[in-house]
Length: 93
Length: 440
Image (cartoon, rainbow over all chains, first blue to last red; front, side, top):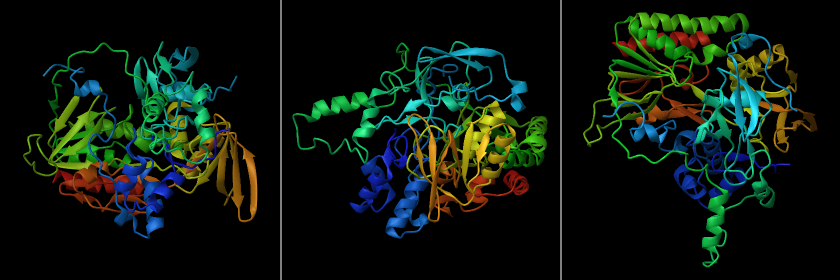
């Protein structure tokens, strides 16, 4: 049987226990929570976990969802095979 | 031998010719037109990968290439999203990050050894001699696949082509199509970018009479768009909005849009951008929420209406989103058994390599149901990345954030479900309104 974990960030395998302990240890904002636990740093870049993490932070700190805010979404917002960036697709410049 | 989950009605009539894939060396029957993910799910292959740290089994969740629950090695390329990759005959599909395979992964012992939390960064932090050995082992057991089977080649400067457009529409669902059409008919040069192999988004998921209507509406709008001279780019994505030209010089809003097509990268400096990127499903948070078989309700509708594949044989539908009713009704009609538990809360999903049962509670009462699939029709997370890059303000929508309104940022508009739940008629009207405005 797979153990009964509540997985928040499936990419990096971060569960609610790990996030809660990080919040209790003093991570009061998304960016420091992200840096300590690694949530939202996997292939999906926070698409699936960010709302759940925001809820946990807001409930723990009493902040509004707007005040918790979002992480910075840098391009590319969807995965791009590196061969496109290395000029291996299409014609040469 | 698991039951084949393909149904004989609906998209079955459109099924392509039979093909064969190899999954970790085993032959899997499939059909042309199916994605790798749909083909494997249909054949009863629920475990598509193992998770990075605990080696927990993972399978389809979103079916839209957003959740990274189906990363596989395909024809020698690692980390391919199986749910959005078309299958072809002779395709070599391998599970990654597992030994010997994702079906039976010996490393799954990590999940059992650390039932609460495993923090590899803290382990042996005070044992300097053992730490490098520990790191080497952890690195070998974790990670996302191995390097591709390609010969290294010298990099070249990619040929980035310009795309000429006044109005760039990101997303070809109901509101994006309506916006693109309104802008094109108002005389603007329009480019519509959509990730699907078929453009239409949720229009393609409405069933029966309405289903034909939805897909037919998408097709009719596309014909009118092309007649009006618009560029339509399927299987493509606006992957970034840049405020500078790459040499540090600021660009006028909305800046430079970067687009990936199957052939190449395009760059576009439109007068306005319409973000009609929709929303993706937020996973539920109960123990076992990541087991193969726990899926989004919309994902189940994609499997059913695009591929004629059932998400499961005995299915519990939980949550309250607009997709709940459609998923329950359409799957029941297609032959799945729907477990009804009105007002009940999912306490836990249990299973080894997939969901085998679900624990439910309602007030003081608790019980369990044997199911192979739990559909979560929960809240959705608006896809706000481009709006944030354009400098738009984000406001709360439940626990998620959404653009402030139709005027999302300077020269950037938003319409459709990225702004929150709405009826189809509302989204179509909003798209048309925003499209006219963006063309001015």
